[in-house]
Length: 237
Image (tube, rainbow, N blue to C red; front, side, top):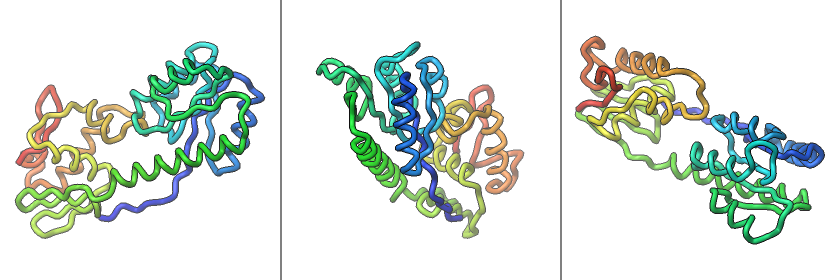
């Protein structure tokens, strides 16, 4: 089964306590066909950091959690997201602090809206290219009669193609990359569904069960996908 790709709207997280500046930025980024989620308080924005964003813009000085702490935390949760810091100060120390906390870029107020648009487009383009490089030319895994081809999102067992959803495939591929290693349901939920998902470990259980029904001769006594009771799952070969 080939993965069908569709154009997705890029999502921007904007945290700026000055409502006028936030409105100007939001309007101009929306003109680039970007979805902008705006917050004016650092504490409220902190609650959103587990959601998926392609780029974040943080003012350094914020009520509640400041922009540097937001930057550091988002970088921990989403290593690949692009981050731009906004600051009313132009001191070298503020710039260094932002970069040390994981920012990719910074703009000093007042700034040109055209420059902001240009930098956002550049970082989003780089983000997209990095994601494409990660997704291209992945290793095809072969385990006896089972072939897992991540480039075509295709499963073949005993010379027969097996239909699977994207998440089913990604879960199997992730486990098969490290045979015999046990992963907890929470680890798998984080790795496969990540910030796009707000469900529970039951999601992992149901996905494993569906895979077993497609791959295993006897789903009640699985050969490929083993349960390690009290811990999680592993790929066995």
